[in-house]
Image (tube, rainbow, N blue to C red):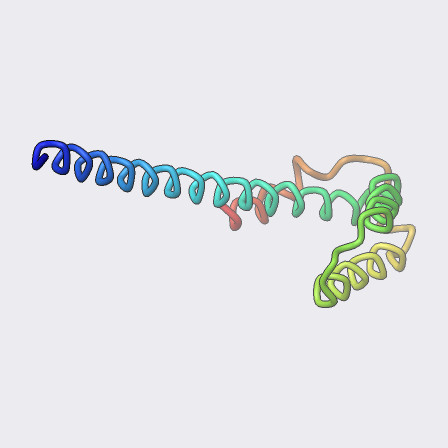
Amino acid sequence: MADLEQRLEKANQLKAKYEQELAKIRQEKRKQETKQKIIAGALVINEAKHNQKIADWLIKELDKNPPKSKSDQDAINALKQELANLPKSEIDTESTTQTSFKEPLDRLV
């Protein structure tokens, strides 16, 4: 009977270790996904500030998929207002990623 109890205890320890490792992997994955979203979002916002088509698309997508929390809604509304009020002379149809986005991206990573 003691042998069975020892084996059961060992199995429970292995299960706990496995669950800890799985939780760590999931946490690392969430962290990586969050970083990807921040970088991709910064890229899109930067492009929208320099490309009217992207600005229009972003505003439309933000209207279709509004955030749930009031603070997030406020932040998105401020961004939409900024994009809508950009002087047309500051917005062109050329991509700015290669020239103007490198420095902010370097600060993010």
